[in-house]
Every structure is written in structure tokens, then in C-alpha cells.
Length: 357
Image 1: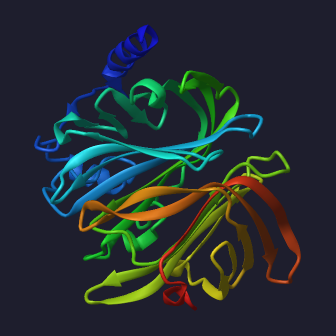
Image 2 (image 1 turned 30 degrees about the vertical axis):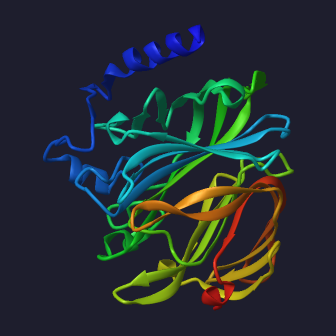
């Protein structure tokens, strides 16, 4: 508990100034200032729900894998504005598949006025660090992590993040952002009185926000490939509702050898093949320059809650010890990259027929 109080105090004191500006933390009901909305559009990692009151959710996904690969965890801090308005932190242990859902009053949620940094009760999450103090007794989770060597997803004037120009499309029910493609972690977690080292571990951060998650989707991610490189891969294919109809859209990237390969509906890429069972997935995506082949095998599954009209009322399953293989070929069929990763995240949700190309 002493460690908890000291670290919490440091996290409050240290970020008083960010980029030369005084940092202010706001509640949902606060007015963050006239320029916040414009700035947040081109900073998708920032809190986006500053003007929302109902039928809204927002959550960040912090995945971490220990240096030896024996431990993998994910924390999901967020808010739910609906019939059961509250803030929360979800936790999943990839080794056991066990999950925990920690509720907080919505007034215990604070967000920074000029960067991605949020408090959920005594728990702090930002692009540079995190601190958790969750649960009691045999369900106690406490610890901290410092994030370094972070690779950010590029933001451009007409493409503010991984959604590209789809970020500007009105009436979308769900938006997606990538905060960190790849980074290193230093720190420790104390889980059920067991100390787990995160020193030299690997991490990844993304987020979702909006009204509801899609009715069906495939999502996968890993940046712990067997070749030991800083390769990072993410793919999301979803049945997306829009103005009374729906369409299948996808987005993803492969970061390898300091090069970012983007593939998405808005880049003109196409899903040529999609085969899925309860445990396995095969996807082939092709554009005018490259072909991506993806193969995934689910691992231990944990139950998470997902939003419907802002309420965290839907149960889904996620593995963060899945195994995936990614092959990138050029237009001539020459292999640019072929890698296998364990400790991957994998979600196969809803009716797969809705995702057929």
C-alpha cells in the first residue's frame, strides 16, 4: 500500500506541465475549452467523449507481454454512458483466461486537457505510463509501468489515424484508434501477492469509441514475433452499421523493418479470402502493390464486456495467448516478410457470414 500511495502522488505531481502547457484534468461534465474538440480530431488517442452524455462508450486497450513471454495481460480503462453509467477498468490474464471487471463512479473518471492521460479512480493510464490499484484481498492487482521507445501511428491532415478519411464519415457507430504500434515497458505488477516483472517487456495500445461495437468482427494483434524484431501487426474486419444498412470494412497494418504497410477498405485493398471456424481464421487481403496472408489460432479465452448503445451489456471472448502467422508478398509474389507470433490477441465475434467478402 505504501508503494501505491507514493506512485500515485508522483503521477499527480510529475505531469503538471505537458509540452510547456499547464495540464488540467476534466470530468465528463466539465468544459475542456473551445479548442479541445478541434485538437482531439487529429489526436485520436485523446479522450473523444468530452461532449457526450448518453449512448456512448470509450475505452483504451493496454496489452503487455513480459520479456520471457510467460506473462501477458491487458488492461482496458474506459467509460460507459447509458442506462448504467459508470467508469471501469477491465483486466484479462492471458495465461489463465481469467478476467475481472472493476466499476467506478463516472465522477471518478478524469481526462487531460492536452494529451492522452486518464484517471479511473486511483488508476492512471497515459501513452507514457500507467499505474493500477485494483480490487481487494485475493483479487488485488497493483503495479506500475513506464512506456518508452513508443512507435506512434502516423496522423496526416486528411487521414487522422488508422481510420483514414473514414474518421470524417458521419453517423458511424464505432471508431478505432492506435495509440502505440510498439513500445517497451519497465515496471512490475503484483497480482494475488505474486510479483511479476515487466522489465524489458513489450506493449501495444489502441482504443475504440462511439455508440456500439459492430455486430460481428475479427480482430487480431501482436508485436511479439518469434524473430525478435520490432514487427507489429493488427487487423480488424467488421460488419459496420451505417444509416440503416451495414457493410463489411477492415483496417490494419504491418510494421516491419521500420516500414509501415497499411491496408484498409479506404486504401482500395480487398479481402480475397476469409475462412473461419470457432478456433481458427485465415484471411487473404490484396491491393495493387501487396498481398497479406494471415492465419490465426485461438488460445485461452477470457470473457470481456462490450458496449451496446453505450451500455457494457454484451459478453465477448478474447484470447491474448493466440498464435498467428503473417506473410507479406509484393506484387510479384516475392515474400517480404514471413513471421509467427505467440501471445497474440485474437477475437472472433458474431456471425462469420456477415464478414464474407
